[in-house]
Structure formats: structure tokens, C-alpha cells
Length: 168
Image (cartoon, rainbow, N blue to C red; front, side, top):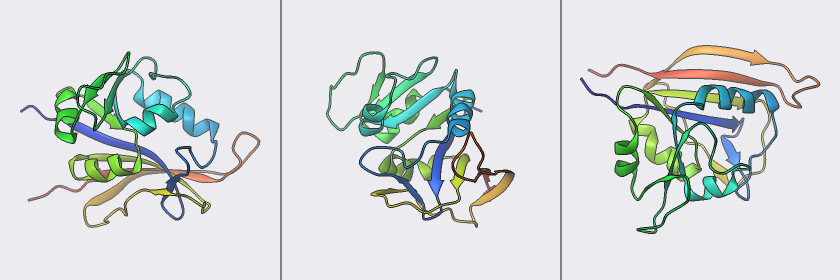
């Protein structure tokens, strides 16, 4: 059976904040290394604003799929999609693909996701973009790693991995 394996990867503050002014809320080097390790070699799907916010465009060693609401728009080095459905079609069968933002894209892809990689930052931030609430009836926490603040990371945080609960 052909199946799309859609995962969401995101860093979320205590108040579900994920960004402000099209920028990340905090800099956590260990989390960025984890993001790179998990997503390298895979498709990464993002909205145009998220693409514009990247420090390196397109993200190297990944197939960058950018969703735009401007039909026919092209971005060099990226595959373009003009709807959520088209973006899902561009994801390979039976291989994990990652949704990397922003807020509206996360909300629209959440019903299709089978796994969530959440870095929960143990601090609240002032923000204008938020991640949707995770419904504990739909998701099961399968892995947790707590990381204390240190010389490398200004904030304590937890890596939380959720799998969608099986539906009948």
C-alpha cells in the first residue's frame, strides 16, 4: 500500500508560540543540529514566508517544496506547490517528509501528519505565530528527552516525539 509519511517538526514555546515577525523566537544550536540531522535527505515542505526567513535558501541536501498562493510563481532550486494537496502529492511515497512551517501551514497539515517532532522550549515568548494545540486523544508521546540550559543552550527544552494514535 502506498502511503505518504508526513511529519511535522517545530520548536514551540510554553505558550505554543513559534515565531514573531517571520523569525524564530530563540536560537538553540542543539535543536538546529537536530533539525538538520532529521531532515537531511528528505522533502521539506514550507510556506513562502518560512522560505523567505531561511538563512540559507534553499536548504541544502533536501528537496525544498514551497507552497505559494500565487499561481505559476517559481523559486529557483525549489519545487512549487499551489495547494496543500499538491504539496502532499510532491512528497515521496513510503518515505518521511517534513512540514517545517509556518503557523498556517502547520495547522493545515496537522490532520495529515502521522508524527510530530516538537522541541518544547521551557519559556513563554511574545509572538505573533502559534502552533495548534495537540489533542492528547489523537497523539501519543513516544519519546522524550529533556535538555537543561548550558553554555551551548540558553534555555532548557524537551525533545518530544508524538505518533498519531491508530484510528478504527
